[in-house]
Amino acid sequence: MKHVIIALSLSVTLAACGGFNGRENAMYDARFRHPIAVDPQVVTLQIDAPRDKVALSVADKAALGAFASSYKSRGHGLLTISAPSGSPNERTAIALVAETRALLSEIGLAQAAVGYAAYRASSANTNAPLVLTYRRYVASASPCGNWSENYAFNPNNELSPNFGCATQNNLAALVADPADLIGPRDWDPAYAPRRDQVIENYRVGEVTEADSSENASGQVSEVAQ
Image (cartoon, rainbow, N blue to C red; front, side, top):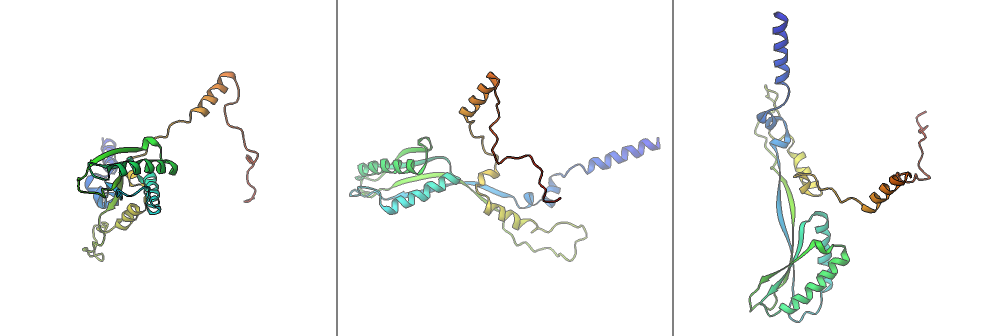
């Protein structure tokens, strides 16, 4: 009976150490104490379209290039081009939309990634702009600098309120695309020609793996010998 009691008490002790609950996570894990908030943000670029404008300027093309580059690295959803409707410069704006579309295609944006819309402009606005927008995500962590506790007296051996705050803020500032903090990215589509070639090779009994490079070798390095 004594051995049974000892075994039961040991199992209860181990179960208690199996994992943190919500309160302990908040106390010892910086991800809970200083969470990173990820919020959507609309990025906007306006291009003036006065009635006498016949083409995009050099400055317009440079701004479009930077805008498209930012969209390719951090944009989500469509890049939308909105043209004014009902304003005196409506026809000029439509012509600039066509030029903008061609420039975005040259930069490398697929047609499926660009959307089009119209917005109602005032009939007195002779300079209603083209408006380009896309959605991106922005990451931000909680502010640091909580030195309210006495670090010289910590009988419970708990972490300070400021522990991990700088690391979380650095991560929020350095992550290439904050959307990755929400969840993993989707898989890219399979490369169909290679897949079909492998299946065909397997069907006719040929080698399915890629050819080895002349520089490939299975020899073990002798540097440490």
